[in-house]
Image (tube, rainbow, N blue to C red; front, side):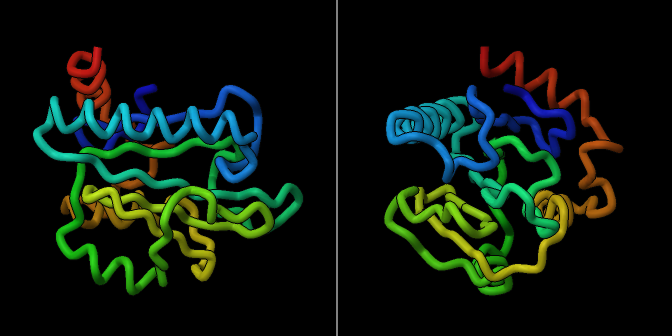
Length: 167
């Protein structure tokens, strides 16, 4: 679905049908569907925007934690038509570790999952819990770092353009 606060033209969310806190809590069949959707939308973005998107999730699988990684506690992943200017520094700063696939998503720790445009999977559990941290990094990369908050900045023109292009 399109996302309020679409920082760029080409910003969608994959949202779980069933209420779970993070994609780590999906059943095996749901994880297969999730991976299918990731690949489907990666390829769609390549066709529409001539590049693969980045994908990320702020996973908060811990039900009663005060240290939630996500500002919305319902599993959702961001698909974004963006490539970081200096991805290596972000990977280093957030202490991302490369992983082979989504099986390494943690069911008992907050995490950030990141898939880059080259389809490399990364995860970190070692980060300061800051709401919308990846959105902040993307907004800064785009040159409008104070406009990251989806609750304040809707970017309606990007939403409309994304809907039109992905129909």
